[in-house]
Image (cartoon, rainbow, N blue to C red; front, side, top):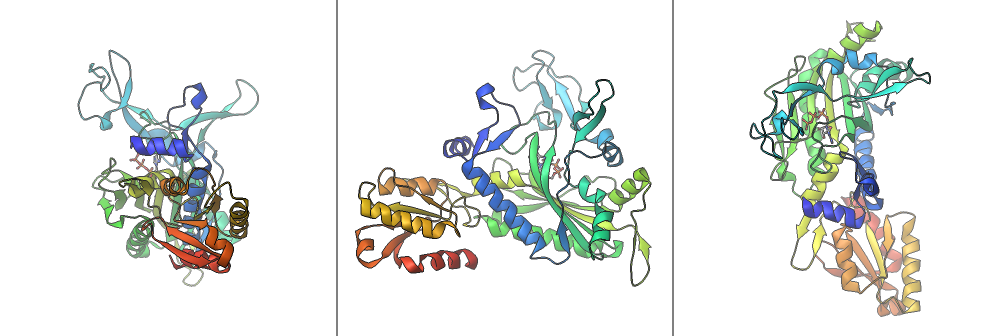
Length: 425
Ligand code: ATP
């Protein structure tokens, strides 16, 4: 983990937030490479949800909702974690994170656990004393329930259908830590699948498999992704599974949850808002509250697990064996020598000819070996070198990150070569 955290900072994947002020625990910024990789992930998720499946549409809801939403959802009452405090040093911890009943910092005695609400508060309004308490959303999915009726009325969708969303969530975690794993501000990707109660079994199984297949398609070690079935369930849930990444510092911790939510969410919001959130089947005229299968995953946790999964140390190099569609750059272009104008010029031409269609970077610093290692470390799948032969026959070498094998390709075939590689995945 320390090596990955250091690499992330050194190469511009992830920086600690507000570092010049000493940091801000539980908050991180994504740097130039990190934002590319994160956007790649979000695009892949979005495309897979909305293009590869029928009957799924997206929304992008507000972060702050009406405060009653969190009463209806149960968060104000029970979005809590057990907090203990050390009687000696007054450091606070999440009781269920501790292996022993003593302070991990000074060994002191701990208080009895008390429930601590992790919803983040803010206030709305401009007049002091008349401000209304509001909450930054503790989970992104609530906005989907709020917009269920709007989506139904403004589209021609019929049940079963899904609404998906990628968005920020905020939690005042007692012990943020483990880098991106437990933050106070993070991003979730959610699908809420609305169906007839009779279809729940079928769709629960369907989405469980689909989501696992999606994660497995992106990881270098798909066999490390496993299901964990929850034994302790929320009172409304019939079944719940986590997708976990095993053989890592985060064994037994979830990347995504697949939850059987039944009619809990729409019933509660119907009751609290006094609006009718039921559905009438246009053919059978049957009237019912749609049931929900939820898939709720963490963008940041996926990002972190992909780094853990792809990080490889070899004799002379560090390689991120990232899936090419996830890698920040797909191709790096180099002139063999930085001080030979004709090579540099040709390399710039190749770089510019690829730039509008493929995520490509240019590098002419140091020697060629160093440039390869530098690209391996950030997961760039292919490196293109312009050498003296290029000036004679218009071919370049393409080096593969994983095998380090090189092949010669004609410049006019280069764009199609990479596009074919990327679409074949
Ligand atoms: P955990 O038990 O690990 O706290 P959770 O059960 O509270 O997770 P959910 O409420 O189901 O998590 O949220 C859905 C997803 O959001 C999780 O699978 C995880 O990937 C992500 N997530 C939850 N809390 C955090 C956090 N503090 N930092 C980063 N990602 C998070």
